[in-house]
Image 1: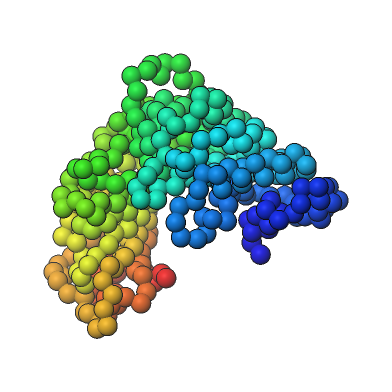
Image 2: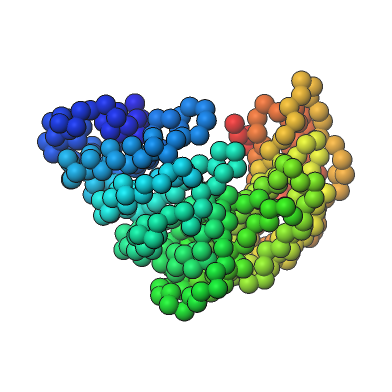
Length: 388
């Protein structure tokens, strides 16, 4: 059984009056084993593993059972390092949620996962003031390093700025921010503590995504090293607006990951003078590379002169019985022709392509890519792999 399944069994099936004698939670159990078992805790409850949204009362029961578990065996709470909490619009009683948060003194990572079934996101404003206040306190907790929000709407910009000034890592998945007029001058913290930032958002004119760079957060990104940006296209939108990587993006980035659904958006790259590694993930619907990739690569060479590693992951969206040969324009991408390659990207030591296996576009892939990147091929830094 997985550790989480064992925890679920303890919470759901062990009688409350037997918890103190349960070997998996008793103080007589080997400490290293309990530390590993309870290091990561997810309060999703069993209904999350079946079709349909979990009900608020079921999730509340999981919180209440967890509180009782840590009350009966208080030594376990200090072992929990990572906590994932599922919230739903139907969850109204936050007393148990607040109790769980107050019970765990050594958390390093918190993920708030809202159930987005049928597009219903959990709104920050639905939480009571006491829970909001507790979250603000947790953000500056000395042990906390990572905070993640998934499918949550209306997060105040002050909270994001507060987190950016205190934590090492932030993640936003399907999350919208709300720029409140309140002053952020009271925010205290470091301007260079944040090291990693991850954003997954929908980019379309109907539901525009809110860039954290627009929330007066850029001043807190001076120490940012890793940035991951995933842009998803709304299936009901036929338009695709240009995407700008703002000029006030941090110049300290060493790793940048960009993931897009097709077609590739128009990118306007700012300067990344410290960038060493760039990963680009995109989808294709036919055995040829997107036309927009040519302009993107020209921008990359200009914006990141110290780039050492460039990797591409191709995700095909068409699976056919026939095998299709990779075709199309075989002219080399600028600046990856033989003479130009080493001059414009003198530090590049690795150019890697990977694609998902079992697709219809395997035939001739490596030969086709080699023609588009002759310089790296001759320098023997062009490599390939397949992924499941």
